[in-house]
Image (cartoon, rainbow, N blue to C red; front, side):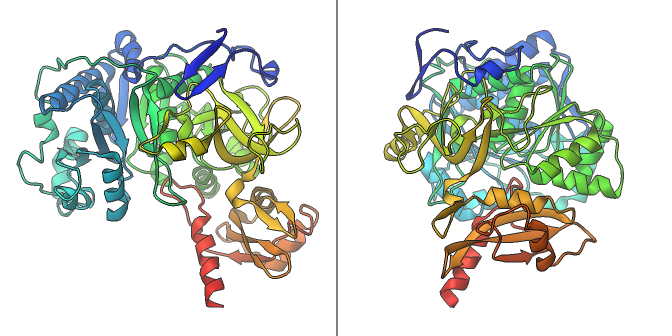
Length: 572
């Protein structure tokens, strides 16, 4: 690739980067990726391995040929009901086959997928429906889901709820038993035009009307950010963005054998990490996705032992849960060859324990919703540096910008805000031109994360700008403190935030969950940390808890703890 390639709002100059000299030998950073409609990821496996299983959901298997046929029938069903190119269709689903079918069916029909978190409360659902203009929603006939959507009909832009049968997604015996055993959990939506059933919608010949799509300009998915500050924003991820990121990941995991891989799909697919790394990437290599509706450590371990997946993606708390469970009862996890951790910093102790348990290679990666999401990863089989998020993926350009002056690139070896360019970077925020402009600097996406790059081109996250603790004028990075606390053998989880300090301005406070059966006092932990942290970094307070707050995908969350401490200050 030569010259300049325009991707969305960015202009990405091609050529060598200083980090490419340490790239894995089999990966070419410069190899171009032709923009394509995202649904074309399915074409190769459907052609090459049509009888291969694409999905295993609670023992019900779906081949690539059947998946393709159901996708086409869903696309035609939407078009027959009046779906037009650019219309937004929401997915209000846990992990299940309907998610993948509806996702690609919407795209083939020319619609835009809007991912909704099924655990959202009514206010959050309403805000996202209104912001995105979602008129059609796909969900299951479960009361826990339908009861949240029903009040939205007629009071928001939502006009249609496609109802999918949970029983029909199960194997024959489970299908027979489900309505009996789970009768109280089932919803009974009315049978009217506003509530088409999936079976009715897909009762057609699958001959949908192909829609002309410009992959670079056409939005495929509206992926809403976590909304830690204000109302969540919808990142417009184009067909080219998501297609490119799937291919970038596929090239990075270069040892995948087409049609022979099996991936554990336990992270929620409505989250951008699982959507790209498990759904899109693994389908592109003809893999079988062993899909579980949610993460439960015992069920996940059982699936690994019986289904024998070769690949897994998870967040650090998931790997911590595996380590804890296997320490109590050994399990055979030897089928897993490669794993990636993302979503939050991976403590070195957690990585090492998991690799000892499985014998696999667990690498830490990095990304964000606005980049589809993966931008960095440690190389498989190469040098995986402790505490590093690794190297930029192919075609991904990275600069570290001054924390106080985003127009200035910091010298090598200094801390700076990660700013990213590449084919995976979003087109912008939905209906928020000003927010889009604020997120970009010099044609690059600002991440809000502070990092350093070493002499080999590996990046190390220091912390998030919004989490930075200013202590007596010095920068204290919570991740540094957390990594030190994690070295204590009795610690299972740790989160560090800044609290008000009348003398220093702010000081670190550590919230700690101990491993089952372990005991530890604050004084003992402080003594342990004395040779690992300087006096400024040393926690002023340590609070032990039975559980730490987590996000809906299982990442440790600071905002609840920050709010608690702020409330204490108001009462003082």
